[in-house]
Every structure is written in structure tokens, then in C-alpha cells.
Image (tube, rainbow, N blue to C red; front, side, top):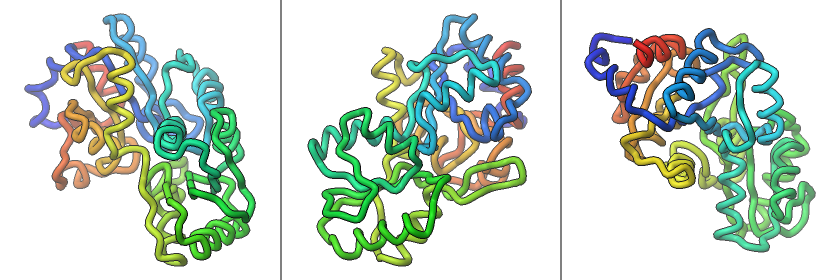
Amino acid sequence: MTQDYLGKAAELGEKKLWLLDMDGTIYMEDRIFDGTLDLLRAIRERGGSYVFITNNSSKSVTDYLKKLRGMGIPAGEEDFFTSAQAAVLLLKQRYPGARVYCQGTESLVRELRAAGIRVTTELEPVDLVLTGFDTELSMEKLRRTCQILTEQKHVAYYATNPDLVCPVSFGYVPDCGSMSIMIRNATGREPVFIGKPQPTMVRIVMEKLGRAPAETVVVGDRVYTDVASGVRAGVDTIGVLSGEATLEDFTHTDTPPTWLFENVREIWRAYTE
């Protein structure tokens, strides 16, 4: 933690709802970061709670639950809120009964169908196109998406998240934001992004758990999604340097975090001191 943030460290103890990003924040692929379990344990011991909010729509809550439990992270289904879940809420509220073409993983398609969304992955008339972070992306999928957006001018177009890259063990791979750029270059269509930096996910969880903005903190490794979503929701934020953003990214921005730490272990130290 830099000197600029030291004076605010005591305020961390007042936080009762911790909204934690996952990739690049508490783990990297299948490697849990040192300090993650310590922080989560300390939050619950102090009467707080944590919810994992992620823009990564490639996995369902069931998939994430299996992944985190495999790392030894205590979690239940109620401890997650994903951009896929946010997409379900949006589709049901704004487009009830709509036929949705989805470019995403099989996991995302199953999650949408389980929620009662009329989903297709084939080339046919639809009301809406939804794209996600597709770790199973193929040229055939991209062709279908581009053809629908080009030929069916009336369809609404949404994407689960604007993240440009997803951190992995060797660096990064393209995320949904980069995939959307490819589609824009081919079709001229821009999606409406659903997940962070929109404040929706943060506000929904606060309302569900009955927590005020002053009791809430958002933790993440990206300025333009994690931190920005917290700022827009009116809550404090923590940036970590263990994922995508660099120190320069966090300091040269209109939405700087309330606190900036090297990693999750440093957050735990400041929280428990």
C-alpha cells in the first residue's frame, strides 16, 4: 500500500460487505493467491460477508462453485453474482419472451435456458443477440453472429462485459470486449455492455443483503470495470496490482480506487492490523 492510502486503512474495518472480483484478484486461473483464505476468514470472523462479482460469463455459478471449493474457498451459490446472472435479469425485465441468439460457452447457454430464456445458437430470426466471454469461440460462431447483426438490422445487441483481456498464467487472452471489437469491425454494430463498470451488479447485491454504501467495498484488478463500477455505485473501492491494471493505470484515471494494494495478502494485513 502506498503512503497516500495509509491514513485510510482504519476505515477498512468498517466494511461489512466485500464485493470481490475473482480472476486476477483472488486467484490466477487455478492458482489461489496467498492471503485470499486469510482475508475471507477475517471478513466472516468480524461479522461481514463477501460476494464474488465477476464479469466472466464463460462459467456458470455451479462451475464457479466447483472451482472455488476445489481451491479451498468457502462459498455457496448465494455468494456469487455474475454478468450472466445480470444478463438474465435484464432480459427478463426488458425483453420478456424474446428469442435470443447467444454467442457464448455451452455453460452460458445452459444457464440462460435454465432461467427460462428462449435461446438459440443457430442462424435464425431472433429478437436479440447476446455475446459473452467465449472460451469456446470458433470462426463458425463469429460468422453466425455477424450474419445476424448484418441481416437482421432490428435486433438488439448486448454483451456481458467490456473487459478487453482475461489474465492467465502466461499473461492475457482476449476477453469479451476484444471479441466485441472484432464484431464491430465486421458489422458496424456496437453492443450495450451489461456487467461492470455498470453499477447494477453492485447495487443489486447491496439491496439483496441490506447493506448501505458506507458498509460496502468493491475489490478488483481493473480500473475501467471493477473500480469504475464501485465509483458509479457510490461505494469505496480497492485496487490490486495482481491482475490486469498497472500502478500507472490506477493513478492516471478519473476513477482512482479508495485504496491501492499490491495484492490480496496486503489487504488482509491492513484489514486485521
